[in-house]
Length: 285
Image (cartoon, rainbow, N blue to C red):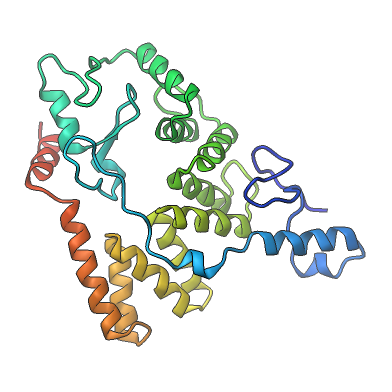
């Protein structure tokens, strides 16, 4: 009988049934274990997401609390402040470096290079269930950086916890973990489930990954729906896929023109001259 290595084994709040039971495929359905067979069917049905909820435009991306512009999709172009848990774009984070004395532009906490002080800030924010900090902590355990030991199981537990608090990026991380078999048993069904939850929460990366999965499965029509939605949210790769879909006849001219217009508008909202100057400074300080 199959068993899952998912974090917090037992009852999955997003599924509602015993998460120890997995859908094992044709072999399981033909087995002589009716109870397990029925559990697998229930599991497969519970993990499905209604298309009406899935194929909708994502909510507006988070904004930098200083310049009030949408944060870029590229996570290397914004920075998380451990003192207050706010995500600042590269340009506003650049102001911290220029400041004399250097302070967080949001909460005014003094900048520090002390690992002990940063750990204290993180612990305090985790205690109040700050989703950004918990997601960051999960990434730290996953990669073994910033003084935290590499612990993939702990990372998966943190991502599940913060995903339930509404952090789409954490569900995307969980989907990737199940897709690749990192820290948990490889499970394509669960990977898809968490990617779908992340997509509905606004994760453009998860939406793009779903499009790629549908394309590989030969479902071009569904794949283009995902690519069009993520392209409108500013994803360059998805925009290229949507263009190819238009050339291949899977996307109508009207849909493609609207997608391109929305893509340009969204990309413009995430771009500014001062952000570009900060990026150049970071490359050549």
